[in-house]
Amino acid sequence: MTAEPALPAARLMDGRPPARELLAETARRAAAFRAATGTPPTLATVLVGDDPASATYVRMKARRCEEVGIRSVRVELPRTAATAEVVAGVQRLAADPAVHGILVQHPVPAPVDRRAVFEAIPLGKDVDGVTSGTLGRIILGLPGFVPCTPEGIMRLLRAHGVELRGLEAVVLGRSPILGRPMASLLINAHATVTLCHSHTRDLPAVVRRADVLIAAVGRPRFVQGDWIKPGAVVVDAGYNPGNVGDVDFAGAAARAGMITPVPGGVGPMTIAVLLEHTVTAAEGAGPTAPRP
Ligand code: NAP
Image 1 (cartoon, rainbow, N blue to C red):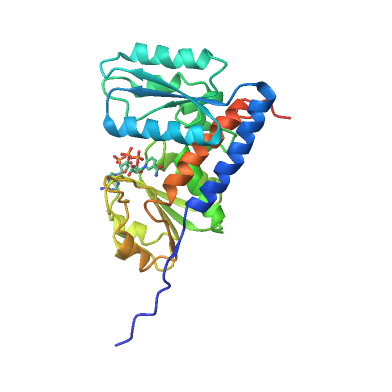
Image 2 (spheres, rainbow, N blue to C red):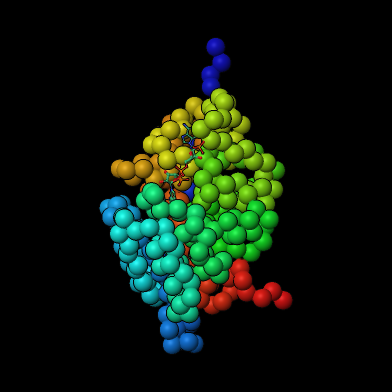
């Protein structure tokens, strides 16, 4: 019987050091903007309903804003709010020159038409990358505020020296803010991409082809260790109750070449990107800035 070849112990792709760097740079830019204009960069957050997890996320984002010198404004609407009311709230923020970025906290409770609410955000203030206009620009490789988690993942891959050109990438999940833009960014970086979802046949076999796997399914420890190609780069975007990712970390780390921890991998990058986008929007250097 031949022994299994020794597998490399996975290197951790820690998201905290690159996130700290990005936050420090963002704080410097926020201070310069304030010094030049007399007003701080401002992020408005729209919270509809009383979901405790959403309220916690909004509070956490406000705290992070404060830490880097961004003013945060919170607009709260009741769970019973009609679509037109929520859209009107976003339109007021869109028209307010003192507001530079708008984030609608999801999930927006049904029966509000979430898409209609998102579409009320102008491109230049779409710092969370939720509008169809932004997604179209990303697919085409045009400037736009890339949704914060996929952009955070691309930066994390770069920070850890992953060269994507020519690699087989598998993205698990096709949501408009995560899986779909993620697949586009990987295509634009010259990877060969397979986008999987709940109708994909023989998912383990597809995942086993991945040199790079991005897991964004929203199911705790869904990806099993024996699905991982030896030496693969595994990015776990999942964030489930109990600080658990979408990948079975212990099993995957035994086969992967590199793997993100949960927490401390993708999460810190996501929030840092959101704050950077807000400052970029304030500087007027976002997707609607005139190009030379
Ligand atoms: P979502 O909108 O619920 O989308 C989940 C995707 O996974 C869908 O495309 C779904 O397929 C697919 N899926 C579900 N069950 C599946 C299965 N059994 N087999 C294959 N595919 C399956 O979730 P999301 O908003 O993209 O979030 C995904 C994860 O990322 C969650 O854990 C979330 O908490 C996390 N997240 C993390 C951050 C961060 O900062 N770290 C930010 C945002 C989200 P269908 O399309 O066919 O239904």
